[in-house]
Length: 196
Image (tube, rainbow, N blue to C red):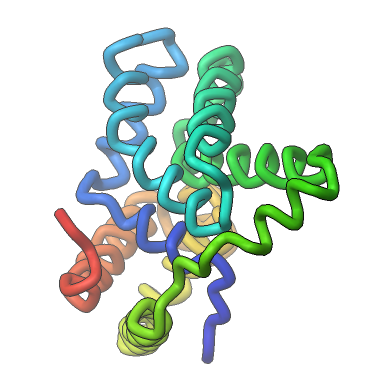
């Protein structure tokens, strides 16, 4: 099966060194108003989102403003955080939506300015992206069938562990174990692409 990952950078950014339990603990702390936990999330996420928006041709000052607004939105709505879902993925979706809204509100002259900016994607970038996509697809294909199925449900389709367990008729603990092994497999396969 071939996966067409439209936002490969998001995929790689989400392959953090934190395991699922550490992420859930961090998200719960943020939900409960822990400013230190939020600062940790901010520090580990800001640059990744900034690089993503910059790669879309968004000016530096605008990207920083959009990211700040995305973090403010998350903090102000922290009571709605579901610790079982990726807050990183949510942050990227918010930033992406704000970028689209910004571009839709921009004057036509801003579009011309955006189009005339030099393309930041070099032939080497395209080659590395192609290598990355191939490595991801290969790593997923090599997973045992059950592990691959769990990974697809939890990580690609963003189902919770509980939802995945119900769908696959296995225990949430089994889902957790499969996800830990799947992420380990991916990290090993993508070690040349991920800076830890």
